[in-house]
Image (cartoon, rainbow, N blue to C red; front, side, top):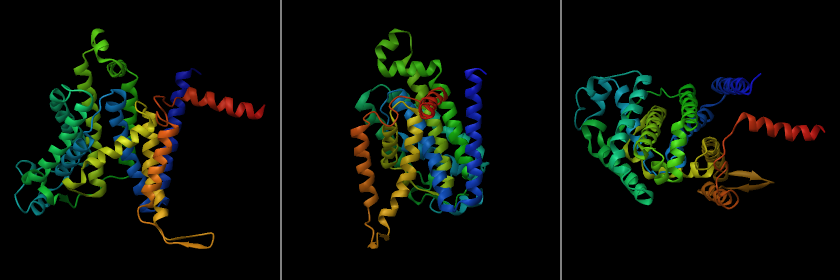
Length: 350
């Protein structure tokens, strides 16, 4: 059996185990645990797509909260029925023809990604005229502009009242299906000639252009690709929490994603996946330190905010002992895993 065929079989087997676990979770886990699994999938989608522009491409963007908001509002507006829009928009009626449009959830997610990607392409020209810290400031401003527009566009977003009563379409299968598809597309892109061009621009943009790479086109493509999946994730999030408002999409969303991709390792898709799982699940697991409990016969009353103190301490340890993140710029491969497995357990048998 060739190495490529073996890797494909292992990948299919791992996906089968994942979806078998999801089926088991859907049948046996409580709603709280299922919600955590759904959140993990959405954050993996966001982290992997965000890592493409910040890690692989090397462009310091702070725009995910803007793209998340655009995708969430697009999907929510398209799935609400005309009657629901009539009841929700009490200050100003919704713009026509959006007021009479109602689309299936899958189509709304596709439109959420497309609209977000088109806005990213439109913004790429002014955004990528600057670099470094200035690029971060411009993209940070984009997030603030989107939030202000969402607050003031009463006939489109319902302003600060937000959109409520969205159908809870997002479930384990939608969340993890989009997550797996995002990872697949991102890995294929990074390993393609476009991915090599992105890494060349990241290392030395002037040298890359001297070799014939159109840096602006590559950066625009990466920006739009990343925005597409962040918009889709926004649609998933909107139909998971079933209510959205401009105050939900603050810079803190971007900040949390930035922590995830830095902890995982800038440029590593595997690291983004691992960090998203650890931070999303760990944030919930650490709630035990804020709740009353008994330890060795002593009653512990719980300290509000203690989980964030512990979380911050863990981040400091990671920065000290893994300065390049959990994975650095390395990626998981079946060949590497099998080589490690043979060295580890072959030595133990010997």
